[in-house]
Length: 208
Ligand code: 5GP
Image (tube, rainbow, N blue to C red; front, side, top):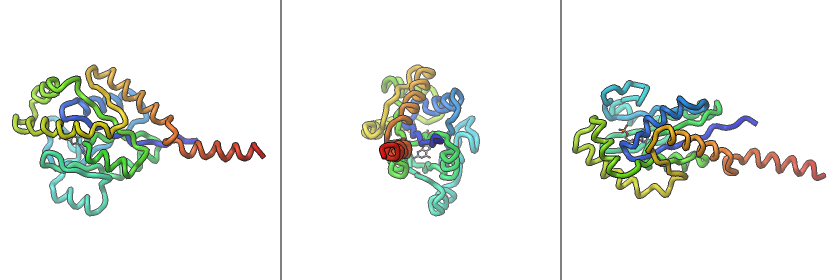
């Protein structure tokens, strides 16, 4: 039986290095597809259209919502972020696991729509390290950093809703750990309903 792809939702406070983790995961292992979100925020230096995000105007974003082009969307620090549905559906169909790097409101909406989605939460080793990483990145003003740290405190209240926590201390170790968790998730009964149904049917047949 062909293995079906699942959605892997990865959330974590701003500055935990989720982006780097995801890129490494996709590079180290086959069978992962990385979804590219749509946002109304401006590109950071080095970010490219269609690679990190599809950068769109507020009007374009709202029209995407109206046309049902997004699986989920949320507002984060005064900007909209959303997941275009077409790519996700096509990759799942092709049997690949699709990674969505999104915040908690979106994560919970995805879980409602796709109950087999796996929810991972990436944490920094500690809060001081998180602040340091945000400051070192140098892409946000002190005011925005303050806003993102306040948001992190808010987001920390939802961590228990996730399936697993991964701590991003050493990059390679964290990537290996994530991969193992995803592989294990595939073997859980709730993600193998068809396989279980089939064996039951077969057992009925051999019993007669
Ligand atoms: P950043 O501006 O740092 O790239 O992203 C800010 C936050 O938005 C991060 O927590 C990121 O995970 C989240 N985010 C990025 N894309 C999406 C999306 O498509 N949907 C939702 N709900 N959140 C997203």
